[in-house]
Image (tube, rainbow, N blue to C red; front, side, top):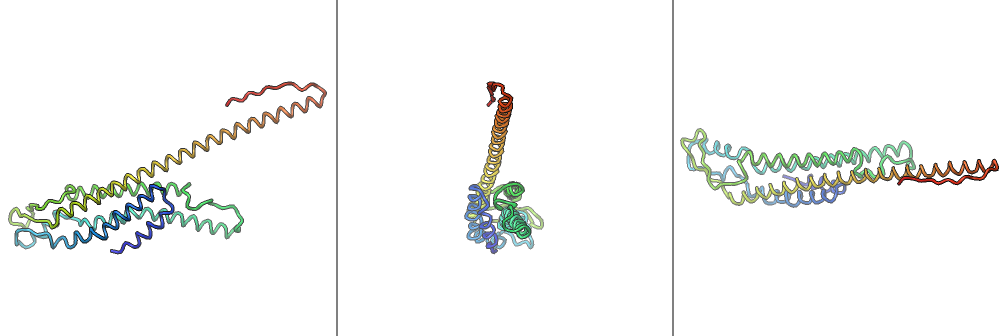
Length: 262
């Protein structure tokens, strides 16, 4: 399977990610995609041919293999990697949409016009929501596939021997899995890396929400300071106007004391 497309996708979205997002991309590419391509596909290989049972009953071997391995681990992980990287494409497409909108705006009103976006890749407005929703989707995909792996195979263990009683087997048949220890190690490795990616996405969501809250608080405090400064300026202007009016009439200027609650 050619993973060059996913590599290009991950490299393209890297410049729009936060520090947590860049770590997530590194973990996905180095510890999941590379390990999957280099090692996992070779470890499993033709797993059905290596699955042997101590019976010559026609069809028993195929039925027992389908019962214990309803979906191939390799194909399940391939689907997981595809689905978990697709949300990153939405972020890239959203940025491309902003850039195209900005280009059309400048063509219509000239290059010296006011820009629609100060930075098309800055996570504000709709792009912020697209980015956060993509993180939630990635967390859901990883969690779903971890549960599916546990549900389909009744855990993450690979016993050396399993007993099969499915039809058309004549009796209880002993079936043997090739390289169970090696497969167990790779399964646990893929599960752990998926959990690490879930935690990284969760921390990134907390970081984005915390940063957004701090910006809102700073903006609110700035608005209060501007309103306070405007009120003081208006009061001073009113006092100066009254003073000039009284002086023009020949009356002594009164003394004012202004108290502003901070």
